Length: 182
Ligand SMILES: Cc1cc2nc3c(=O)[nH]c(=O)nc-3n(C[C@H](O)[C@H](O)[C@H](O)COP(=O)(O)O)c2cc1C
Image (cartoon, rainbow, N blue to C red; front, side, top):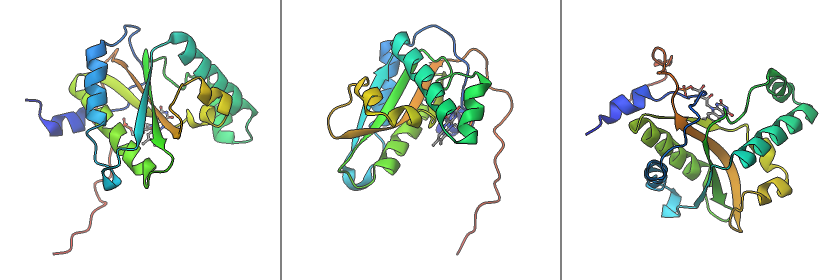
């Protein structure tokens, strides 16, 4: 059995993927892990859109870059000008949406995403949580292309693909962030 602590410690955001598409059963296993996440009141208020169409992924990236260039946000403009692909040219991207009338969609969908990232790592598949895709979601015409069910709003993307190289070093974390009361 895979050691959960090893999986947690090994997971890093992967931003370079092989072109090879993931196997469908791997993606399904990863999604199953997502839907096992805890949710407020057990509402499970999520929907997952698996995008493997290279045309749609290209469209999402190019449209997002265009919107960033047109925005007055310096951070977005710098990313757009860097020439990087916001979806890291991943072969699979999962868009995670939350049900509008649920009580805590940000927390619930984030819990699902963390499960997705860890499940991917457990299969030695690279992943990255992508918040930048939010700029694409601002336009209803863009959202319509994702065929998300009525009543759900897209929140985040997760890129997935086989890693082209192993991670370098351990993640730097400040561990001085705890107080104990006994
Ligand atoms: C809410 C959220 C949004 C993020 N958005 C992006 C993003 O748009 N692009 C990206 O490359 N990484 C994104 N990340 C990944 C973080 O940059 C990354 O998790 C952080 O730098 C720590 O590195 P690690 O994941 O390798 O441990 C996001 C992470 C979170 C939690």
